[in-house]
View 1 (cartoon, rainbow, N blue to C red):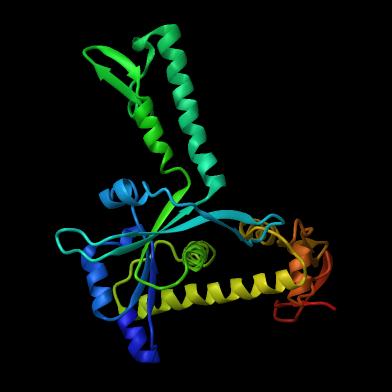
View 2 (view 1 turned 90 degrees about the vertical axis):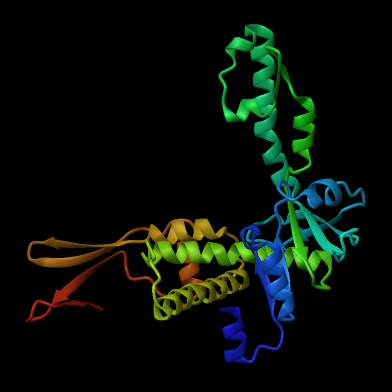
Length: 303
């Protein structure tokens, strides 16, 4: 698909941005063979090179602030880590490690709760009180019938708190790479939103036409979202995208028949719905208005 788009639109340079599900040696080799660049999410826990070398790097992080649709910016820590060529002839590989302190705290919280619960059960009720489940089992050491908390395992897990590792062959700075990759989740979010609002689930693609149609609708939704967010910023409206969708979906209109007359009743605007209508130049109809019925039974909106 990317090759076809490059040929069709005469794109001179290509940089693929994808999540961890896209990364593999064969895929990277195919991309580099075409002379393309890539920014790919990696799997820190599953990749030995990342676990043993990249995350063991002791160089300092650079802290940046990411502007978002909130009053407070999001702090993000980034750093470059290059793995030198290996003995088997592998080339040097560049990684960018991103750490979100807020996400790190969220990742640490459930682990702390599990460890505290294990401590309580072991000391007060004994090993038999521990119900075997995946969450508990991963932090337990069982040896000849004795059960103890595996604190080494817990400390090892801390290395992954709030961490995202990017693999790349670009020359962009670590900061630019992190910001480019962050835009990927926005695109994915738009795809999910478009599927929901346009009721395109489930999607079974069998022809090029249906694939192109789906991509077109999703890309159009992305363009409209970006334009709406631009106008919201110009108007000083600060709101998360999920809140925008919730407030707009709450805006409804109901038709009521009363004594042979028809009325349209609009719901009250909630949240930012009213301000959004103003910033895009849309005049909402009156809360209650009469609908005139034509001779053939068609409804026409009265002034």
